[in-house]
Length: 206
Image 1 (cartoon, rainbow, N blue to C red):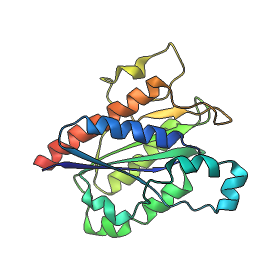
Image 2 (cartoon, rainbow, N blue to C red):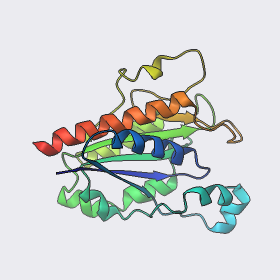
Image 3 (cartoon, rainbow, N blue to C red):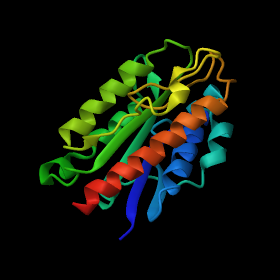
């Protein structure tokens, strides 16, 4: 049987989408893994997105299907990605989390592998608090939390500014959003996707 991985994300300017694609590529390196990318419903109207300069950026991943919370139960492993908003996940991701009460009531996600990734505008812009805060969702649902061990040696670099921590992959966008994920950050995201797929396969085999 194949291992099914879902990567569910909210991205405004494309940075989280880039990490999601890298994580998906890593997961696909594990034989027998099926990967599906899904984006959470956008709650902001197009007029607001246009004023924020996000409408054009979102066209790059407009082809990604919108996630239905019920779909999560089909997965063996799930990665959630959201930009940080004042040290927490975006309201759009929080709204998606809030819509999973039916799954919680059934214990539908218990024992599945779960992980998280994020982005922020600055180097110390709340990445770790966002990742740790998202862990609470995983734990309430009984997911097995999968982080990024230091076998991902890219985390130890001090030669450049880089996101990435034991809690999850991340990227630093710059205050104006002009900085795209670096090769180092993408490597950590690929590691995370591969690692989660490997753990999910082991859990599903039991």
